[in-house]
Image (cartoon, rainbow, N blue to C red; front, side, top):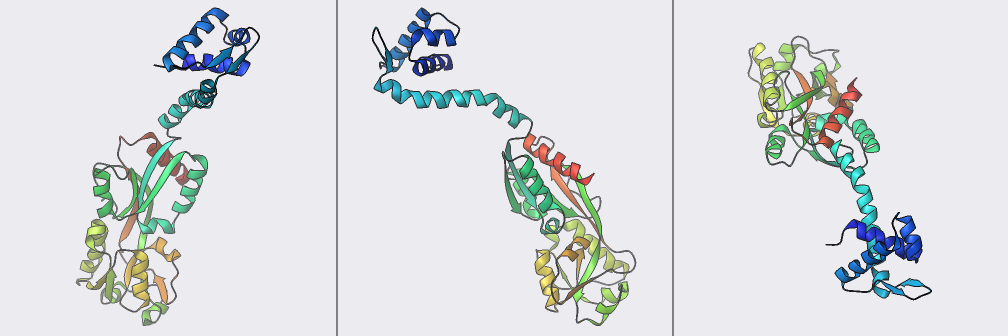
Length: 295
């Protein structure tokens, strides 16, 4: 095996082209250095230096070894810093899932600042609802994820950082008569056809919306389901029905759609960042970064 010490000795002689000066540079005497180079040549099966009584120069084999030896030693010198960066999360990989609603908030700003601070963390983003995220966590394909849920209904087995809590508002067509009102009557809202996300993608939030209708002693008139909030709002603009959306979705301004608060006890939702307790340091670093932004 060729060790790093042998390569350092070779490099010193190759740069000095003088065994005496190379030995001084390595803080050793010349005979052991000469012997070390001879052993390296025997290990490689080639003469690395052409020697005469007056000069030392690289052989063709030595010239071929030189750039590789320099690269290997440079890499070796960088190993402690690389390992330390990985150990404390400044280097690594983060596979991050997120629901579309978090994109209306501070997520773009958090991602930008995290990448500026930790450019050696390879960040992979995947838009995915909770029902998609959970199996990907199990398969090791996700490290952390932003999810939306009813208060107190986050999935078990995860660490959690609460990002936001907000009331849900009603998105409705600007052509509706009640669109001009500053706030909407709950009983009137309960009579409107409803566009909603499938229960599978956010069960607790779907159930919270249904609780609103039960309080009004009505069954929701679901006319259409859609996964993405943008799609739901677009369906509202087409006059398909009304939709409950997190207040943050009001940032998505779609012509022909207005957002209104509803009187009484309305559904609320929380956005959380979830991750496993044994997550890699780069994941923990991202969690700490987001937590700091919330202070």
